[in-house]
Each structure stands twice: as C-alpha cells, then as structure tokens.
Image 1 (cartoon, rainbow, N blue to C red):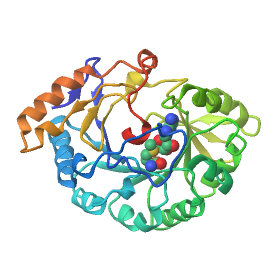
Image 2 (image 1 turned 90 degrees about the vertical axis):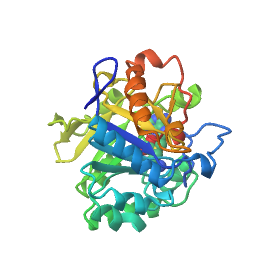
Image 3 (image 1 turned 120 degrees about the vertical axis):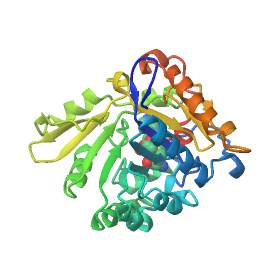
Length: 318
Ligand code: SAM
C-alpha cells in the first residue's frame, strides 16, 4: 500500500531525527531557551527500527534520512545502521561532519549517502556561525569519507555578509573533490530580524555566479534540488524553499527524536507515535493512525509561512 496525503501527493521519504543534541551551535538553527529532550523521552534504537519497518512494509517508503541535532552523536547509531543494512531502503544521513572521520568506514560499508553541511572554508567565519573551532575536522572528515568511497554531497546555507563572498571558493572546494554542492536558502525558523538580515535568495546567488560562469541546467535527480553544470564542469544545486517552494512535489514526512510525526517542517502541529509503542507496541492502531493523520499534511509553505513553525531546526532536522 502506498501512502498519499490529502492533496494526492505520495509520501515516500521519511526523515528521522536521531537526537536534538548537537556539537555545533549554529546561530541560524537554534531558538533561544531550548529545552532538550530527556533520555527516556527519545525513541530507542529498537523503536526507530520498528517505525522504519512499519513505514517501509505498510506504506512503501523507499528512502530514509537520519538527521538531528547531530545524528552522529546518537548513541547506538552503529547498531541502527548495521541493523538496516539489508533493509532494501535508500539510507542517508545529514551531518555537520565533525565526527565524519570517525564514522566514515561505517557509512561507506553500509552504503549510507552522506550530506555534509559546510557553510564556510574560513575558520573565523566557522566560529562565528557555529561557535566551534573545528572546521579542520569537518574538512578532514569530508576527505576521509571520500577516500573510503562514501557517496557525499555538500550543503551550504548562503548567509548575507558572512559567506556570500565565498561562493566561488566553496564551489571550487566541492568540484575539486568531484562533489556536488547545493545551496540551501536560509529558512525563517529563527527570529525574523535575523532571517531578513542574512537571507540570500537563489536568484541573487545565481546573479553572482553568472558573472564568472555560464550555468547549464542538467538532468534533475527527482529530488528537491535543481542542478546546474558550470562551464568548468562543477556541478551545483539550489534548494530554494523560500523563493521557489517545491511543496507540490513534496514526498516527505518527518519524525522527531521524541517520536512525533511532523508532516511539513513549517507546520506547528505534530502527531505522537510513541503512544503506539509504549508501554507495548500496537502496530495495527499505529498503521491506522499514520494513514489517517497523513491526510492532514499541509498544502505548502506559502500557506504556512504566516503561521510560524513551532519547531526549531535543531529539533526537527534539516
Ligand atoms: N547536524 C546536522 C547538520 O548540520 O547537517 C543535521 C541537522 S541540521 C538541522 C541539517 C541542516 O539544516 C544543516 O545543513 C543546516 O545548515 C540546515 N539548517 C539549519 N537551520 C536552517 C535554516 N533556518 N534554514 C536553512 N537551513 C537550515
């Protein structure tokens, strides 16, 4: 059985936040006064595996992405990944790369696609964005992962006045490693003044890039990104949720690390799944619940943006 929302969109992609903790403190990802989930509130590794099998076996989900917080911080991630190695799913992770060097072999051996978030190549700017001095570790993580054969992409959030003068350096960094870089528009999950100050729309970024290179649109991979090849062979993508929303083709649902189903990242509503897992598993009721609530998936970002999400990115996973 496939899973369709109330607008007829097929849901085939599940994003699961493994933890709301992070080893970076990116200013654009957090909200003030965050309260982190307690250990007993978050889904266990067994519960995560069970939910994935429910979505795969009953709803035909074919792709899963682990996110966070920082998913590589999650205790038991090795057991989770190894336990899913024969799951017949496309398995992926989004990481800030701080621990990538340590996990590179595990990810490569289990065929996990990796998106690394990298906003700058300048240590001082990395510190300004994330509060960390560990940029070198991220770059070493990327290089180690590539050496051991990890399928990797780089995701960058362009931020006005911070990294918008580094666009060509970032493109060169990625293309010299044979890696695609995708520019993700800064989304208004934080204080509106901060968002307005730093937001760079796709068209503005493109207008900078075309001063140096022609952009040739290339075959799309069915994802939310639109891809281009530059004259020098570099491949870049844009994920422009704000200026060019792709809600009409959205196939995603998310599960927070404490087990709430979130149907759209801008929605303030969520649907508790843990009630069907604890104190004991009630699989039939869980399946019925998911089939019912998925019909409530909002039509899209444009309708929702006035509502303001109840979630910080760090809680929901990008
Ligand atoms: N810690 C992991 C990481 O850094 O990739 C996974 C979680 S993080 C929330 C996932 C992605 O969301 C990162 O690429 C981050 O840059 C992005 N992100 C966070 N807040 C964002 C925002 N307001 N707008 C756009 N992207 C955002």
